[in-house]
Image 1 (cartoon, rainbow, N blue to C red):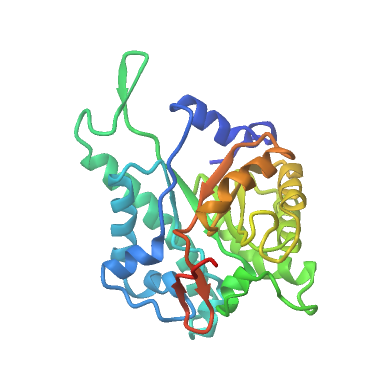
Image 2: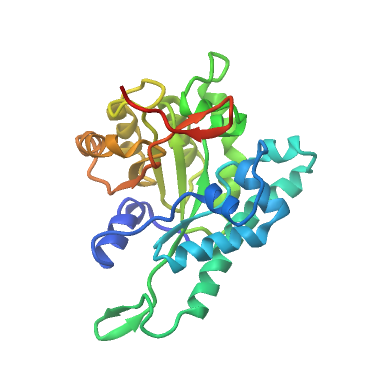
Length: 294
């Protein structure tokens, strides 16, 4: 799907308005893969299943569709060409797996539609019964997610990581996912404004013709995890014509309301919210743990 520039900025707002004023995004992917028996103790995390268990990836998509999701995110959050190559795959194989992540999500959507019975999750529009709308969002995780050291939860990449290095790292993956058949791109768990700038510039430089959303993470309800202002980060997203929504993910629920109010100060674009359940990621243990507040 390709859209004109004027259409991209209102893509999600039009979608939401047309179908009742809100849309439901799916939930945690890795936890559901683990519930189905996947072992994700691997630098590729959930993307490991694109290699070893694509049927489980499809199963999780279908579970979320059955639960009522309007937007499903692909299993490509941790899928990078560099990460696949580090596991011994050729570049062509890595690129194929990125495309496959979108194909599996689209296949799940078609299976879901085929399995739907009349009146189940349907909408009545102008007297006609229609299928519940579902969008496929191609997930792009941050550079820190590729490092698999928890730095997507700190935003501290070090002085050696420049704007150009981030653009070079993400460019080919963005090109592939944008051309693979997804409805939009979801840049997730963005930890600092440098990476937000890299994404915004890449969208312009590559003339990406499907919409995107930028979703940041925060640990204090005021700034993103690096300490950069959420206002500055949301402003970068707002200024990019391809960005159709701005949001927060992987953030404790208690901070969400304040962050929504802050984001709304700098953008009128729809806000996407999908917090965590309140835990903190422990990079040493490589697991989510509960931290009790004093």
